[in-house]
Amino acid sequence: MASSASSEPGTLTVSHTHGDHVAVSAANGTELLRYVYRPDPEAFESRKPYAHPVRTLAGRTVTGYRPSDHRWHKGLQMTASHLSGQNFWGGNSYVHGEGYLPLPERVGSMRHDGFARFTVDDDRFAFTEYLTWIENAGAEWAREERGLSVHSVDEAAGAWVLDWSIRLTNTRAEPLAFGSPTTAGRHMAGYTGLQWRGPRDFTGGTVFAPDTEADAAGLMGTQGPWLAFTAEHDEADAHSTLVFAHAPENLDGTAAVHPSHWFVRAEPIPTVAFSWAFFEEFALPPGESFAYRYRVVVADGAWDRDRVGAHLEGLPW
Image 1 (cartoon, rainbow, N blue to C red):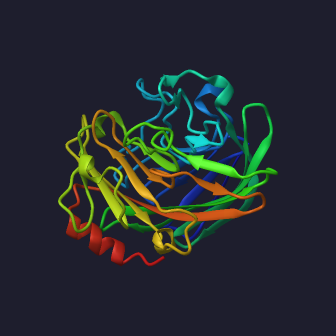
Image 2: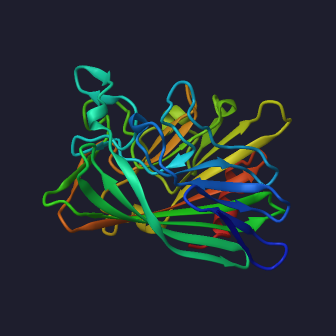
């Protein structure tokens, strides 16, 4: 069954196909975001909700789905590549000294337990979702409270904003150890956390960050408040830009559970992750929680560093 809700004319429209997905459309009719929470058919790909397609206001798709190189990459999704011996990323698992191995017994899942809140107000749509992280054998390891918000639709700038938050609580009787392929021994492959996979035509795109001239390779494993990825689309004579930004507390050495670093590639695949355990593992004790907030600006056009910085300054947290 599908239901819809909308705010005043000229703002966002939201439709909910129960048991399947939530879609958010702009006033011009463009579907900006589809958040899919139905269980995936392939357990090996780590069943979990994801956002795809994500589009600019002009209708350009800026997420990839099940690409041939990594079938478990699905738009924008919350992941944990190495978690106490389990893989909540999907696909092959990295084992030091042996490389990537198909170990389906390690692949966990994230179960959608329900939505606690839906709000459509003026130019903002937000929901709160409850999820359970389940290891492969069926034990429930963690509870998550996830928040998504679509807001700040700016037709003049050709941009809109997606905020994504996580609060995760360890429900085990022992600590949860969060890591990455790099903490397991693979050099500069510290991917984990909230991950974006771009469409094929974003391959080879331009990546930049504030206060540095480094490209994607130079930004791998670095820290910073934001990172931008811009590329030219196939078929259409158009560019799009995505900006990935941390909430201030994510970079606070006292508020955050662990330091965050960028995992970013333009070649051979376009991807960005807000890695919360790039170089070192961290442990979450039983009953304890951690939280992060992230922002993604989705824009038409090839933005530069000055334009990104100015736009972010106009978007207070």
